Image (cartoon, rainbow, N blue to C red):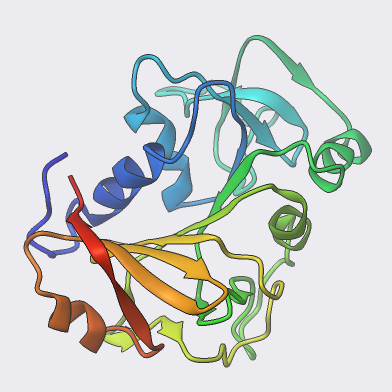
Length: 223
């Protein structure tokens, strides 16, 4: 995986490629809209995961290059989607039974903010119109592992905070944060930087992170 120069071009792919390494063969996975949908193209050839979409698909496929009629098969963001041979379309009740029943091994979502306690805010900025929370609240409490994939800052302002200031999606739910700057584990003792973009120094990551950040003694480069 080639490390970025920290311009915006390629950052999402860089993050998605690192997240892909967290998924194991046979995992049942839900991907949020946006950046997380890039993860499947970076999975190793020996890693096959089953993608679940809360809109009602099991074993969802990649975004099609061409979709002659996008009205029928769409992803959670309303974009064209596909389903793999042997996959299934299910009703919303069954879809959320899979999520709430603890059958999802991992969910990958974007975030507006994450804080030192693993609290997540990813659904609304007060005063702005949004269609709703979608399945995020259910996913982050129902999935066995919650991975946040996002850019480290927004317009230069930290997104990893001591305490979230936006309305929460759920509390104490995040297990891992992956950004273009590093990989951060959420532990009972706080946030731990375990991997770093080798183009950066530790002090740069700390400066871009508002929450207290412990540096792992085994800190490794993202590769």
